[in-house]
Image (cartoon, rainbow, N blue to C red):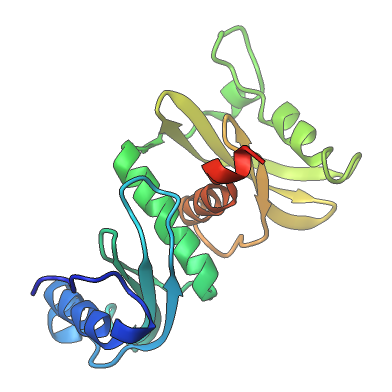
Length: 216
């Protein structure tokens, strides 16, 4: 089944719903849902070559442990589905954008840097996670205590290393995006670091100014 000719909009949601159901049937077989609910339209994408999309919610039993919630996204993009992770539609779209960015750019998960390496050393590539976290935290909460710091994941993004740190800031468990990554925080420590990183990338992409905005 080919996707609808026109991009997703209010007038053709049924066509895109049918296409999403076809896609899920192809991907999930007998576990595919029969209905999709709560459509959410996203009229633009910050990714080059991509455009309007629509997100639907569904439930399915993909693990044998009972039905769980998911999102599926179709439109002028590569269709994909994701565990809901308790995300809103806006956050699920961010996750999709971050996932697409990683796939297009060939972003690779790196082996975790050792704690000795992360503490500093003579190597030119030594990375001090504690110093990095301190500098990022001090931008929003100067002097807040940082405990239980560790590197949760590192990614090679076109030769630059983006690192996700996990720690407690003023007693609250958080992820901190550091090193060469656009700095940021996430309280979603219930999620794997890889998921939080993709979510963060999508949020950064959506907040980048459009070319018209830069000229104002």
